[in-house]
Image (cartoon, rainbow, N blue to C red; front, side):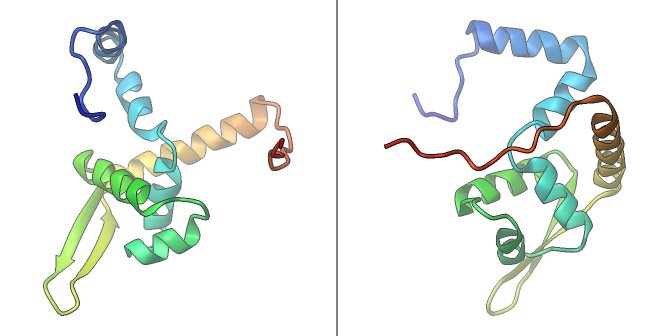
Length: 129
């Protein structure tokens, strides 16, 4: 079985379906709770539209992960992918109205978090040899 396919009858999958049906917020959190998604969405909102520019702004993200995040954002209709058929091929990503609304809500959540969640300054993890 490939790593991208899930067992439909596994407990985790059944719980996921149950929670998504119970509350739409769970569907939203499933999308924006993934690593790098909120950062990529906000950068596109700030007119950083090209894959290479996004990668430059996101220290530590791999090409595969960035590609996967962009595909998820397009699939979720938060971002549109525009292909310019020229040599060399040019691709840009643009935030949709829905994506703009979501980033507004995300900023409100950040403001709430700053007020209500204790913030710790975290150092880079040390590698134990």
